[in-house]
Length: 103
Image (cartoon, rainbow, N blue to C red; front, side, top):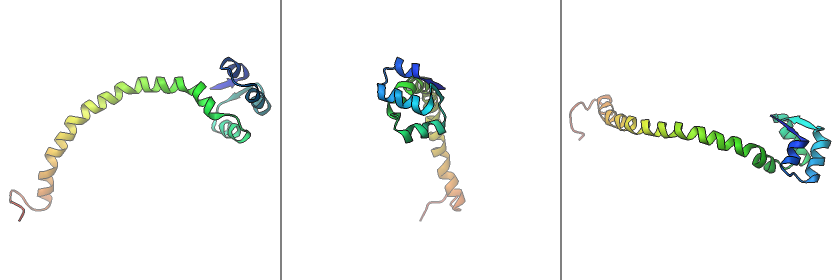
């Protein structure tokens, strides 16, 4: 992902932040870990960046993840019940309590 001065002005960044961006990166920067660390070090507003540039990515991620999570929960419930049904006899067998009462 690249960010340009045009991207900043299109999103109505304040003039001091645009100037600081240009001083730090010139007219364009590829968003990398190194670039983000440099941006933080010089005082660029990363909270604003996340809200303006990443919110739509997060929304899309959540939109695509939601049905996967629902399917997981749907499948998890019966599997959990089967696990609980099978674990007690397994524990009893391991303890050598096959079909006897615990004293």
